[in-house]
Amino acid sequence: MNLTQIIVKYLFDFVIVYQLKAKLDKVTVMIKYILLLIIISAAFLYSQEEHQHGKKGKKSVDTTKYSPHTEMEMQKKSHSDKMHNRHGSGTAWLPNNSPMYGYMIDTDSWNFMIHGNLFLRYNNQDINRNSSRGDAKFDAPNWVMVMARNNISHSGLLRLTAMLSFDPVTVGGFGYPLLFQSGETWKGKPLVDRQHPHDLFSELSVEYTHSLSDDVDIIGYFGYPGEPAIGPVAFMHRTSTLNNPDAPLGHHWQDATHITFGVGTLGLKIHDYKLEGSLFTGREPNENRYNFDKPKFDSYSVRLSANPTDEFALQVSHAFLKSPESIDPDENIRKTTASVIHNINFIDGNILSTSLVWGFNNVIDEHKEHSVLLESNLKLHKTNLYGRFEWVQKSGDELELPDLLHDDIFDITAVTLGANYSFFSFNSTNLIFGLQGSIFQPDEMLITYYGSNPLSLEVYLRVSPEMMMH
Image (tube, rainbow, N blue to C red; front, side, top):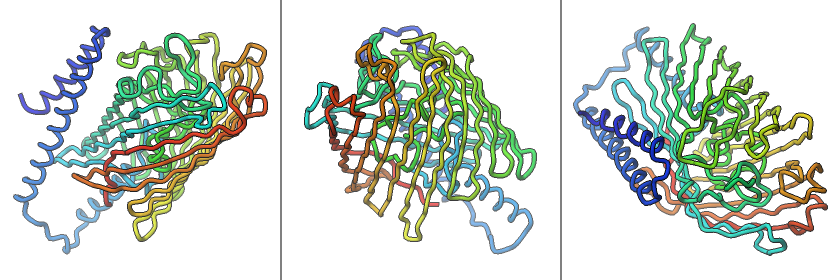
């Protein structure tokens, strides 16, 4: 049995164990995690060593001689690289000139990339303790993604993606404190002023792109779980927010469908424009972060994306979600989003990445709520300076206020500023020390519950791959 077969068998056994033995104790679960990571790491190091060894035995090719075949291969590679750089989460696009962070492995037929983020953090929400809504915690938000792609003949590209998060253990089922955040449940009650943990299996998907001509592609995508064609690239995959460990307060207005158990998407790409439609399960993940929820395919979405230049990625999308919240199964939502993502790559290697996102939730027959997010990250060699501005409308019901205020809509504004510095690197991995703070301005009616201007402070050590050079 070769290494690939061993990995596939272990992953299969790993999934089956969780499906049949949901009551495994946490120690056994952690052992499984560690063994899985060891096997993936071993496969990565083994493949890298074999790749480097193979390079030594290859003869150099004289590229100074012109031939139509050589030019065609160079054009195909350039197009493929651009497609790879703009691939974000699900089938959403980043700008074509987006930097890539990860570990890359190339074989004769496959290209592999592993990337992720880990924050070892102290998080204190409401440091001036003006209300009972705040909390403090040591935690470790994290995720890791493995992508593999392979050219199928001259016209097809196969992409396999697996994203995992160990939040259920490092953050816990109750999630981490984050003032004014809402969405999903814990022990049957809505999570309020906390961000929920992500599922262990956050994406397991297959995507196939078939080229009809140089400028026209058709795309098929299936995920269980996966991400439907709604909203921009999910927040943790945007360069503008890689250094911020917190989910946006408008996450459930903008891009919270990035973990959906059952997604099917069809798309048509013409040059740098793409039209997609998805059928998917509207219900958000349940409280069991280790299992696979039942797919229903009871919701739909449509998205138009455009990358008019290498620096911009634009999208507008609309979706109908059937019963997204388990706490209120009769509530359906129509969701509309629009976004602009922009990158400036300076000559000296510095990068300015900015995202502007609008999300609108129309809770059918009840209320309508808007959200706006503007975030930016300036990379200066080893230093990152970043900020986030948010304005979001949330109902009293969403914030678990007294019954008298359940139907009222409240405006919430938040500003976050942060900075970090990469003080040590090893094996293409950065250790980054960071500090960030947030100030919140709630609606006047919320001051009784939150205080006038609650503050938060976070100190963290971030572990992440270095940026790959192009």
